[in-house]
Image (cartoon, rainbow, N blue to C red; front, side):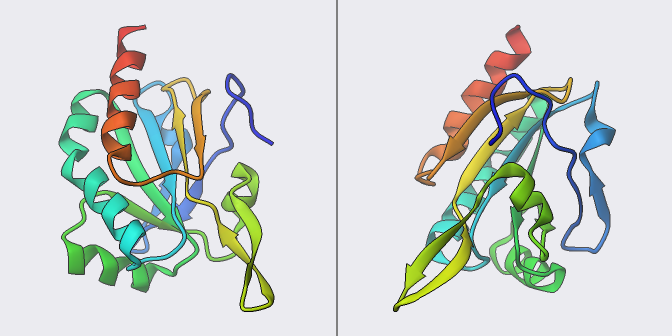
Length: 157
């Protein structure tokens, strides 16, 4: 289990355009907000991605990059992005390795069957690569603005 104050695991994943994102490239330059979400196109995931996209320029002014991660493939991410006009970078973790590193995969029961799913979670990593905030079982409505306030506070420290 990850804890605030420890180094964040490095994230190396392809985005919707199949270009690799590497969080180690941000160290010393930008804070990173990572939101893990269950599935492209579902109502709450769409709401969350739109809200982060709507405030992306404010996150950038606060010295932060925002990325979303799910286990959907790059093509599904591209369709999701294009359909909803999303600007945040969506990363594909099909094999779940990064999800496991961040501890966001849990078994949930559906119709008598247990399935491994992403628990909606957000991590704020400072520009030194250290975990500063961890949120699990996130309610997406208004969540992006809450994260923006926390990132702005990091800039004041």
